[in-house]
Length: 237
Image (cartoon, helix red, strand yellow):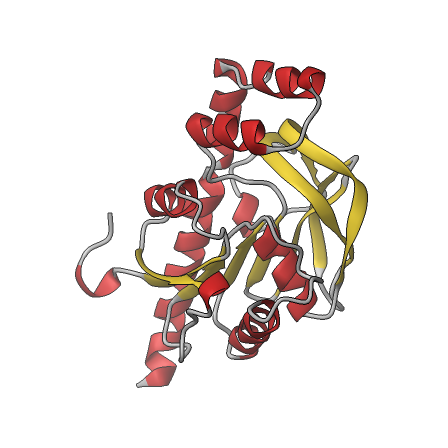
């Protein structure tokens, strides 16, 4: 853990509608002090004085007409304009895509369970991860058009799973999930008995161990943020 002045401070924009697993998972995985905001209740930062912004998953769709969604998208766009590093996860990935000019649409299908995802290029966020990695997924929307100048970083048969533009990254999968979360969320979904059983049967020691290796991207993100902050400090003095 970093100490003293080197300690990072992240804004966690929690769009999970009060899901108990979400803050617990991000608190565990991010080596930073988290300032948490429940954006679904109009609780948003009033400034951008954070080392990074992280946007969580949600059961909402970014294209819905909800009075908290547009301000969230606007805040993320403004944070990016100010060169604040951003990590969007699942819904956060879709928020980031929308904020930067991409397109998000209903897939007409549902991806859920431990799935294989393929890297499409080299990037610091995926440093140390294999070309094909495993992560838990749960989504029915997808980024169907990347923002201008964004780079595709990972995909599978359901489409885009990661992209980057500048200091902002979006990942469609859930690297933060533990087994408890994966099991609980699967049981909450409107799945057929057969599909639910298949998802639960896939929550194995082997798949969870593989997904834990994918958690390295959190370490990679915080390392990037810390390095970027140090590089910018002299110019700010």
